[in-house]
Amino acid sequence: MHENRTLTLDTSGHVIEQGRGGSPFLAFRLSWVAYVREGLAFLVRFLLCGGGATLISLGLDRYAHMHTQAWLPVIGFVVAVAWTIYSVMLTNSVRLFTDENGVWVQSGLFPWEKGVSGVQWRDLGQAGYTPGFLSWALRSYDVRISHRFTAGAELSLRNVHRGNLAVEHVNAVMAQLQGRVMPA
Image 1 (cartoon, one colour):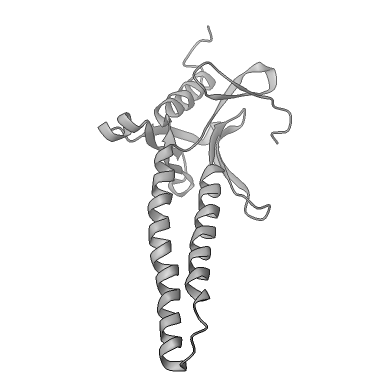
Image 2: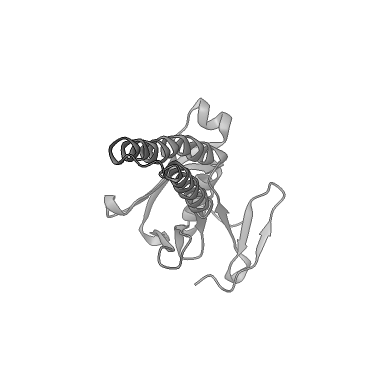
């Protein structure tokens, strides 16, 4: 579906996908705020995995009178680190992009979990983002793209870097496709 595109960067650092006919389509990544959330999740994972493994190790030492379970907390820590690395890579794989067919969200690391979901231009209701001081200051917006006919088919993506520009782009393309805006 997307094999015949070349990726280039514009002057503001946005990725532009050149589609058929030379019409530009934008792709947006998640903001650094999403990675801060992963850092906080690491602390919880560390407490759960490392703490749980330590408690199991202490329990085995106490009741089994064996002192060979010192490796269990290390395994708990390794599991927490591996889980966080996977989660960060998964967060990095998320893209919100437009093409000639519609607006899409792509994510996934492994072949069996990679996927694309979206809304076609003809079915798009409206695009919006959540404004606020923190969103503006961090340049991280929650983006919502509704489906005209099915409320359950809407796209909702948190912490999109410059999501306000993504929404402006989607609404501009939609307006142009509906004939409300004359091309320059």
